[in-house]
Length: 194
Image (cartoon, rainbow, N blue to C red; front, side, top):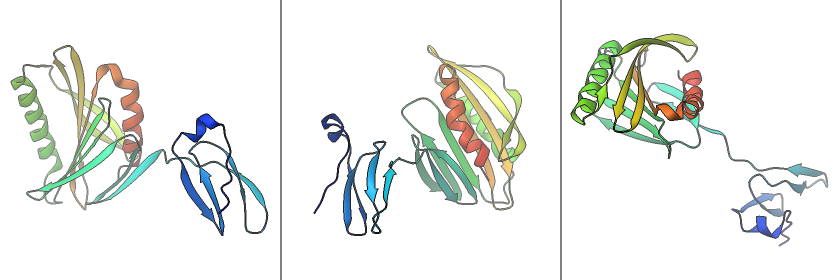
């Protein structure tokens, strides 16, 4: 078998994949250009890249999210809970209730539960503020809480979306010092949530 390669010896220690086109097999590394010869003899420069995002569709919702976040799905008592988190502070919680549930009531219950939980942990929770955010191309009303927990300032936003397929409550949480990272992480989800 022929193993065409490109790149330096230093790159050879990086993650390597095998790509087969026709009978030709290539060892490739993400982000490293290589020349591929088609079965017809045409030479193409190709770069293998990881997707910048992932897609979730199910349970009455669909959205894109950054590849750096891991999605977990749990179901209990008729409620689907999706969590998205990575190694940094931005955290997303999507609660999906049956369509007959009132999303605004579920939002109020989550805000109250968050205030209670953080207060029990010794945090200072500021009063909630009304906010608006475009979600899936539509302006949505939400609630913002600021939580001082030890030396960390957390920002929490909770939104309610009443859809035909489901009542959805969305929690966005991040460390105030990671606001730019949170905007990037949350932006993809907020633009695409349907």
